[in-house]
Length: 231
Image 1 (cartoon, rainbow, N blue to C red):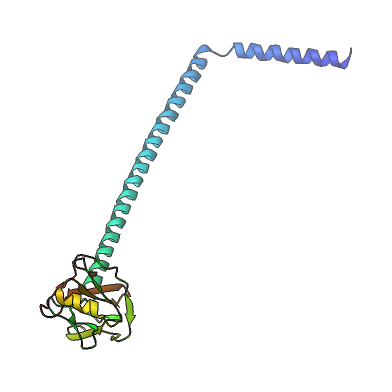
Image 2: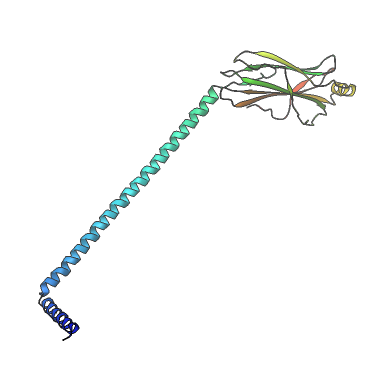
């Protein structure tokens, strides 16, 4: 016989033996295997569900802790910002001209002049002080366009609680028409001074003194009607 025929007979014989052995397995064994498979599947599903619930609960707690940590961090930053702002407000210079301390006039050269008292009401030195001035003559009710020019006669520092008096002249001689208008009060002289200074934290502050006035025979002065710059 051919080798292939012999191999085919052997394989067929083995297959028939295997099938006979499988048919001999009792039905209760198959049922037990099926029940065991169900139990194993249920157990796996149960513990998988428990594990998912634990993971979900842990994730929720992590979210809560993260939110709480963020809230605490925001509160700490807000407290730090408030403390910083309070410190800068408490320890800063405050340069001001006391109300009613202004003197305005036209000198014998027909130049406008303004003098005023000032004081640093703050607790620290006003540093890097600069002064700019502006003067003009215009009709009453007309707001002039203020263009400041730097003035070199000023101290570099202003100590706390040391009253002093400053005086400044305008940048030009007034003509006869302007002098007459100031006397008849058809014109007003405007004189404004802007003081710029820094505090201990290098923040810049400003104090503005602005007055309008006339001259004899009815001299009078008043603060400028527009808001002064004071910060």
